[in-house]
Image (cartoon, rainbow, N blue to C red; front, side, top):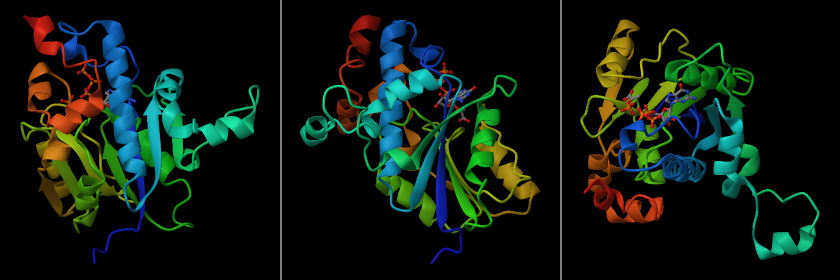
Length: 248
Ligand SMILES: Nc1nc2c(ncn2[C@@H]2O[C@H](COP(=O)(O)OP(=O)(O)OP(=O)(O)O)[C@@H](O)[C@H]2O)c(=O)[nH]1
Ligand SMILES: C=C(OP(=O)(O)O)C(=O)O
């Protein structure tokens, strides 16, 4: 059995519903990009909450309003039973997952992706060590093919640092890390796979690089869309299938 901390907290950076997916701006208008960001985030958060061993999910965002709207279906129980028992003017009933999800505002004076992940690490470790050490699982919010099996595979790796690369093998789509290693600096951005492995080496930690279809496919470009498995395209819904047509 891996000797890694048993408590896993997932951290999902999600900037906002308007500035992301800029590399799709030539084929999707602003409203469609915003819908796409929401669909992708919902998929990633649902997958993490459904993954064995993930205790809670912390989404760090500069737009909590957008994020709450995007994740509403995850936390609000829309079943007929819930609607019937709640009455028309009652507050909505929450799903079982609701108390395992936290949406956190990224302070304006701590901008950028790496700062967002750092905020997530601080929150994830707030109750450690009293409640036990934490394993951090950082996951980008735009991974349409991610499955609970992918998450399990990353968590099964017995290395202090686990990097799941993007399609090109140069970026980092997910990163698992013993949260107690505070000296580890997040290096998301260009060539982050190499930067994260170098960071592990600097600290004398073992790093493992993982490349799986479900972890490698993010959705930044039209080419990424072409690489998506059919079931992941279906999960994304109606907004993107027209990408090729609109480009022509
Ligand atoms: N909280 C937060 N999340 C960020 C920030 N920058 C990027 N992210 C998130 O990090 C993940 C990876 O971001 P990118 O791959 O750069 O994607 P993107 O936001 O769509 O950006 P572009 O395609 O470059 O326009 C996504 O979940 C983003 O929402 C940031 O400054 N703050
Ligand atoms: C942020 C990263 O990449 P991208 O912007 O391509 O998702 C990364 O791989 O660290």
